[in-house]
Length: 198
Length: 162
Image (tube, rainbow over all chains, first blue to last red):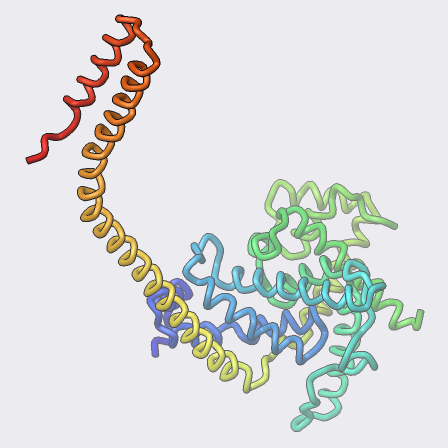
């Protein structure tokens, strides 16, 4: 196994039917994709299913991947489209809830708790504070409108540059920056409301 | 106070530390006089810093094995489907070639029958016509000549039989 292979080399190996290269791609990007998807759909089971779907879709479409964008960007684009599909489906099922408006928390997060189980082996107090902060932030991010949420997560959490986000979301560069500006401003409002109990 | 709309994108780049000169200087000059934009810069910095503290997502340990397992299963199915489609295309091509071969062998027999039959039938029709004309007492010499010429042309077309 060649762990130092670049993405381009992994893609080339995959295209020549080397599935071990695909395994490496999964190992390399599963956490990023899962983290992104989980924050968008706000449900662990859906996030696992969607992450699997992202990679399987990528595997079968890899022969069409022309490497005009990076592999990471391409995976994020697939993930974004699948998440949008799921959120639209949820919207249809619920009938009244628009994905383009701030959403209520669902599933495991509906009571304001964070999803990951606590790991307080080393410093319980510090860990608790950290988890509380994470919970509040995650709650606020989940309430952002979807277009803002996508850009905020990709830039401020996954640290993708503006250009890659523009490719992944298929929007103009200026729109990325504009959405990021408004996402941060809206998040600040939501957190202020939380702090002051508004 | 609200930030000026035209400065929003530059504020984002400024907070992210990627704004280049001369835009950087222009924005800083503007921030010195615009309270709304100065507040917006602080808001952007505060939120960016808060979000940066968030833990990155971590996929469950079993997920990669699950994906790899499904990948192999679907990859196998896809290869089988590809193989089947290639086999069916090859079979269709072979059938088409066989049909073409059969048709090219059969065709000379069919064509050889046509010239032999057609003049004979045509000749019978003309003869019948001439007979009918004679019986009816039709005696226009020019039409009779035309009919005879037609009959001769047909006889010339008719293949000679041993």
